[in-house]
Structures are given as C-alpha cells and as structure tokens.
Length: 350
Image (tube, rainbow, N blue to C red; front, side, top):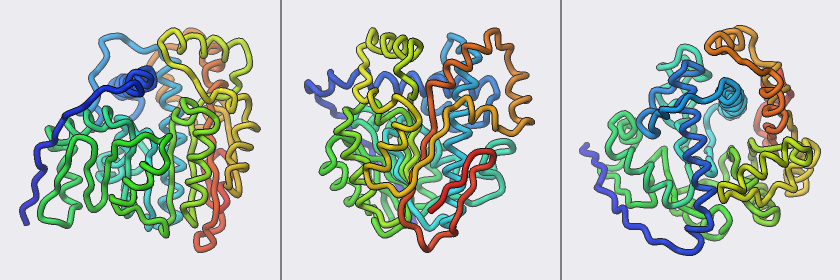
C-alpha cells in the first residue's frame, strides 16, 4: 500500500494578532532550545528533538537543566499513569504542543533505556497536537523532511495517501492542528474534522499555556474540556507563587521581551491553581510545586543528573522550582481502575 506525504503549502499571512502573539510564540522556541540542550548534556534521552530544534551554542545554566528534567519527568509520569489505567484506549490532546516529541517517544518506546516508556507499548488510540498555525507550519516542515519523524506516522496510517497542508496533518493515530486555543469554536471544529472522539477517555496536557491567556480565556478552555469529555484528565504545568518578589522579577523579565503573563493572577498559590480547575467543572484536583516534586524523584536518577554538572547555587534552583508547579485534575472514569498512582507524589483518583 503506497503512502506518501504530499508537499505542504507554507503560505502564511500576518495579522495584528500574529504580532500580538509574537512574544508568546517566542517562549516555545526558548523552551524547545532548553530541552534540546538538556538532552545533549545527558539529562534524558530523546533522539527526535534534534530533528525539530537547533542546538544552542550557549550553555544553559545547570538549574535550568534540572528544572526541565523535573518538568519532563513529572509530566511523563502522569501521562504514563493515564495510559496504563486506560490500557491506551484513550486519546491525548497536547495543547500548545510546540516542538514536543511525546508522540514519537510513545511510538518507539523500546529506544529508551532510562526514560519512562521502555519495554511498553503506550501509544494512545490517537494523539493530537494543537498550537499556533505558524508553529505548526514549522513542525510540519520538519516532519516532512525527516524520515525519523514521518515514518512512525506513516507506519500507523491505514489509508493509501496522507495529505497535509501548512496548518494541519491528520493521520490514523496522529494529528497536528494549527488553531488558537482562545477560540473554542475553531478549536472544536478542527478537532472534530480530525476525528476527535468525545466518548474516549481523554488526557489534555498544557505546559506553560494557560498563563498566557486571560483568566476568562483559560477558564473557557478548562470548562470546555470538562464538559466535552465524559472521562478526562487535565495536566497543567506553569508558574505559581507569583505574588512574591522573585515572581515579580520573573514577570518583569518576560515583559521586557514583549511577553505578558495575561493569566498570572491565577498563579498565586497551589490552592488558587486547584480552585481554578475545580470551579471549571473538574471533580478532583491536585498540585505540587516543582521543588517538592524534585525532592521526591528517584534517588538514583537524581544522583545521575546531579553528577552531570556542578551546581553553584542551590538556593537559585530552589527559588526557580518553587515558582513552577504541576497540577492535575480528573472527572468521570467509573470504568477505570479507582486509583492511579504517581510514584512519590499523590494519588490520582478518577
């Protein structure tokens, strides 16, 4: 059965909103480059990120690398727990996915000796990525040109041909969609066209996404997610404890780069993070700051990564980690096992 990736159209047009969102899109580039550098140092394995993200000539500080390690570890453990509990009969919506490589790491899980997916088939029924159209266009360009990225998609595709344009690719098990998460109607329409199934248990992931929306916009997204799926889990990674002096410095630094944290008022505390989820229709919510998460990581892994680079100022690492958090919320799921456990952290109850 012949399968081909048609040449995409990369036509884009500028609009006032494109300009307004330039700073937010820049954070995607920053995060991707930081992850790429951490992988190059040996914090975790990811053979796919090099095909999507350039390697920075500038070294990243050890506290930044350790922060990204904790972030990737925490999110990955929650993803893995959900996939196991649903026996992969589920779908994943990665909101603001950027250059994330989770789909490929789940598909080719036996490539990993250290990190999270080894010796398991943990690919969901379908994996969706959503981001700004300009970011999606760039990622699609890399997918088309790099066989390591395109082959897993094609191997799982059940039709004779697979077509994509500059802002969308839809295959049997993977879809990437250019859409504005603030426009719920557009988001839902595009997801439906790519065969999103609201009856399947659904995991939604947002990493440093909601904070760039106004509280009203992020609440609308959270309410839509809670209302749309009978059984669902929402993972949110973003800032917390932003009312103190260190938090204010973080805000000021981003503003100097024309990047406003429009939703920072919801990032006051772990309690405010949980309350936002619960008031949006989610039945349970948990939250942990990243310093606490880091302190609960497997000791062997911590020893390994701490041996990679010398850290001068532990206090700075603690300050950074205390200003980011990992939250998760659930609803429904009577057909699932009653409890899903994240090692060293808290129980995730469905």
